[in-house]
Image (tube, rainbow, N blue to C red):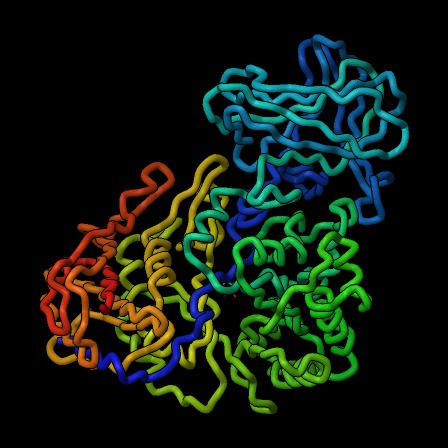
Length: 608
Ligand code: AHR
């Protein structure tokens, strides 16, 4: 029996409970959300050569490609790809080709905006042909050309338009010329249409999937990505703003190089597009290979950098960094309530976090007293406003710990469950994981007076071979399509049906692998009962609502269920497990209800 004391409000539920955590991992931005289709667009080279680029020599043509460290379009990009064409003709051109992120997608009747920086040994070497070519047939699917290259670095724009052909992604892009000479290339870019039509914007399907979760915040930029393996590889926000040609790019701890095309302002615009508040994580002097900055004078520049970052986000045009944001194209300041100081600093064996947190805390509070400052692990010197707890577990561990926050001290710091996931299933979690997640979320909801925010992690994964660094990610995709895991749909359900009040509740009887939470919307009187049955049997539940004599008989029910724990969604079968809506017609102040085996359900009760 589940007893709900509708008029006894135990606490207010946090309006910001559900949000998103994100970082550059699993090709989340490059090769994922960030819509750029050209991989390694700035010709970053490593010991294997220049990843993602190949020389093209058609027919009798002859050419060489090599990274030239002596010339580039900007201080940030002081090198370029030098293409030396010894022999070529209009019919047999020579050039370079890019494979994209596991292919370059092409959708019918779609226009793609491209650009590159180039200079040429002489104007006669051009025009540059741009061909989108099918890997399978070698056919040119769409093409254009850019004429008259100059001998100085210059940006060239072009568009490619697809006709009515079927969508495809086994394609590559070729830049070639039909005359002998030398061309230096840099920052070669191609964008499909983006969400809200933003220049340098995001993939539409992924933004829509996130929007359906109704997230209230975005925690960025990490995660380990904030820290980097080494201090010089940390997330340096100042190198991620302004024109793309002024962004130097940087190595990330997840074993691939970041283009930084999705930089600080793009994170903020992502927030704006999905009406989320930013939860800004600032680098706090610790990088993952046990490198730390001693609190005191050594740490001062890092604190100053965080203050500048907050000013870039929140300052108006009269401030130095606010003016910089205005110059970057966003006149209005962003509202900011939370700043997280570091990430998972319990890994810092030196014990320096206490001092580092205190130094950041004092400096930030002095300038921004209203900001809530999140600590990544408990500290002694100062009481943090919020503590960020992380949980990566299996379903059984979550079942066993659903009462984790029931007895947490309400006078201590608030809680941000900034990373959590049931890690069962790969690359995306299976239905058994979704049950573990849902059980854990019922516990978080019942304690959402103290848990102010919670976010699943990681959020995104490119499911191509080599795309994943971390198993069990919420949303999977390849170049052309994307899908939500069962865990994703559990998030959608929980995010959609969430009231602002937590009524007193109690249960009697067998509650083995049965989990619940109840919230109520104070303005409409709607009551959301979330029920989780993690067994293979039907669970009969008696629901008694006291203080609600006027419950309407017809209730909406949304169900996520599967026949087995291993059942899942995938890029080939994206919708095996999705929420199904139905009606329940016997709702009342007291009613009995049968919860299907292996199911997550929301019952939305209306009152008259
Ligand atoms: O979510 C993956 C990683 O897990 C994050 O980068 C880190 O904060 C945690 O250890």
